Length: 253
Length: 145
Image (cartoon, rainbow over the protein chains, first blue to last red):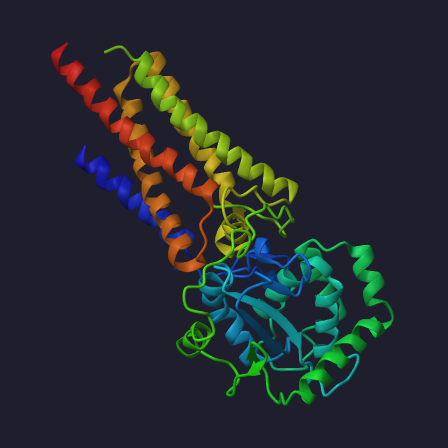
């Protein structure tokens, strides 16, 4: 009996070791795309603005000015944002808005920063999953290296389940109208004094220093939350089932 | 030892687990996210790269696991062969180890809890505990009888 118990535990551990990818680290993928390691919960997406997540009436209104090609933004999204989301956005304390500051392609309308930003906007309600895929799959060979090609962006659209006819219409002719929106927002950022990405603003005030670790961001957010503040019953993370399809959502039972 | 009631108890655990695994797998096939009981954890877990092992959705492994376990229980109920219970015990223990690993991933890596996955894990853990008691009773009955 003891032998069987030990054998079963060993087999279980072997399965875990293999499944965890310790021996053969290979991230899960959809086609050539790596699935986001820690995707943003779709139930947090602000129904009034798909580029925002969290409680619209949160005491802290946070904006992240970002460029999808920016490595520091990538670092922030992959390593800081999951904690930020679980501790502050999901709890109703922070309303987080993504804002375009597309500058790495030097303002070229057909450049990768602009096309990626336009494609994410053209994803409509799937903006945030699209955002997660872009950062998870950011180029490892440098900026403006051809990673965010039209074909690549279309594959992301398919992976996140975007309505392709609407997406294709939005992206037609170089997504001129949407690129103009990206340019307008970037100009707005420039006028506000932004000169690097990511730049974070809390309740309209820019934080200096680009990407912030949670050790700096957490106290800065906490300082803006009124003492005794509690989320209203309807505030915070929406608990309504989002029902939006994920690329191939399989759940670990 | 009468096997009807213990087998029914074990069978219910395995059948509930199978139903949950089927539901999760149906969502995979339909390309939808499971309806979450609370919070947004299900979508997060479902969209994480940990939702697949070797490119295969983990929910599919859940079906295979539960079907085998259910088969062992039914076979034991019909034959009374103690080796089948022993096999169920070993399989259940493997499942418990894997369930613990998956809960670890949810709590400390993905930072999201999928209620359906927790429910499935509960059927494995409590089913295995029940199986241990049933097995002990069966062994005692065999020694006395």
